[in-house]
Image 1 (cartoon, rainbow over the protein chains, first blue to last red):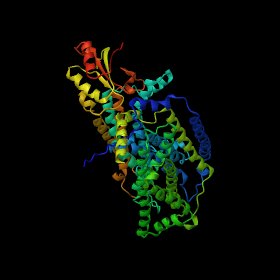
Image 2: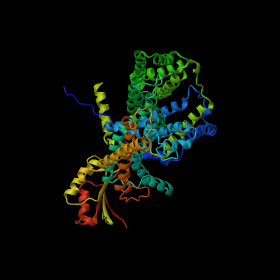
Image 3: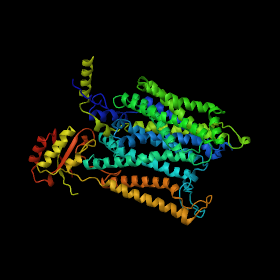
Image 4: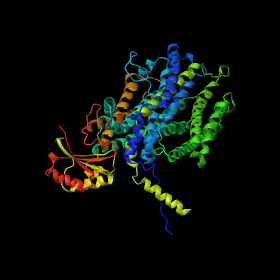
Length: 465
Length: 175
């Protein structure tokens, strides 16, 4: 009896050659905008317009326009902030952590995922800036700049200030990481460009890249070090975001489980957003050979694992609240589950803990429609998670006479809509004018004999039958 | 680096052919100006005899600068310039300085390294690269040989390139 190790399945199917990759990816960049794309951009610009109105009114009249009251002083703004930052995490996880682990399947999804990271962080940054009421304050009060108060410096003991450093570092490092990867692909587009304008634009964007072996060697070294830097960075960002809550003395927030639990939740929601975006991109751009069912299944497995971690964290929090014997802590959790916001809590539990468990079934995790629906469900659940943590911990505070409920106004919803408009406009522009798949990296993993392998497998399968 | 005007350009279809060709060409005593590939090929730098990149060292030094800068800034602001009594606690608690220190380290390290990369590789928005063959960013591997830098004749080099598996051998002149 002879045992043959099965050949690992090619990551890119369809027997693509390097030239096919160039053609397939450049087609969208070089072609005329389609009707579908124009409609999509128009819708997102519409969202952006509605949102901009709400945002301008908020800035003009102040955040009193929001539904905040003296008990619930933090609601949708911080919920949306944490939600968007969390979504961003998948991009860095894919490009940095999977690079360190040499997971080559990342190569056809990292470009779009990193773009998503950057746009999501931009959206997230709107909330801390806007919630200050006066935008300009966000720049010179939040940074350690000499000022006319003496100089009275920023407080480096405050997690909110750590957030300023964490988010801005995260954004700029992710942007650089993304851009470094884009340079060789811009050069490809530059060398194919027919008209002068696109030649000039992509020429400038490509920084004069020529693909010299020496530059590639340095590029590889830069990518590896950036991945090494971005890995602890991405873990630190959501850890610091969780410190905003964990270092406070509010029951329901003051827990040491927050950092790992937030990071897992961030990756969970981020991957769900990647699925939502990529399933559509893949379909519209006909990238089925690049983003295969295998890719989708692997991402679903990550969603399943991180979803389970999040589920365990929810239950652990509960047990620890009981075990602590602190009445306030116990009440905060019982109130979450059975209080007036029970519906938010149970939405969160259903969407985040129960629904990803469906991915244990292979048929579901390899089904596109199911994946798409579940990816949206997960993101709804993760929004509720932040809402539950923030609002239900605040709305019944230490004095029952000041207990209150939070109702969002049009302006709460409007500013959230603004970020959606911003995110989708940016993503659609990216999808049209930038290569959505990292061509250079994908070319490096093409097996020129991919077709041969497929044929061999087919023959073997037939023989087995 | 002093570069000439007249080059012989060998085009290779496949990365394995290219790697073997580089070995063969270098063994026959030809100096390769540079190899241009559409994607990174592992081990190419060894075959070409390039020194390992020192960018990691740059990254480390920039990171160290970030660490020092952040700690100096915070100890100066919170400890010397305007000490603040917050609940009777230490003016300069090191543990709460760690997050900002870490972020500044990463920030300076990443930007410093990438900046260095751009400078040493001569990458800039208005950069005009010397393109030996336009297909090198698509699917062809291109080996450029500076004729002024080699003592062998054009014909000899050309035949060696052909023997080494080049699908085309072209001449390229820059003025």
